[in-house]
Length: 42
Picture (spheres, one colour):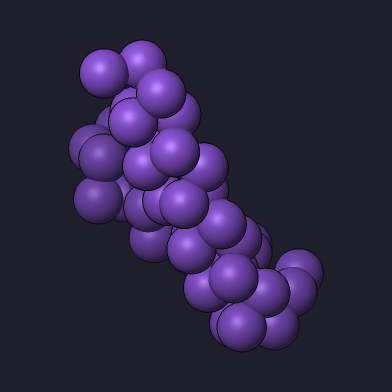
């Protein structure tokens, strides 16, 4: 299974289960958490 196919399947299920803005907010939150963690680690 290719990565692109997995992303399309995940995006379809995610869009069908929750609004787009929720997915967008989660992505931003995950990025912020990663940035803070990398700053503390480095």
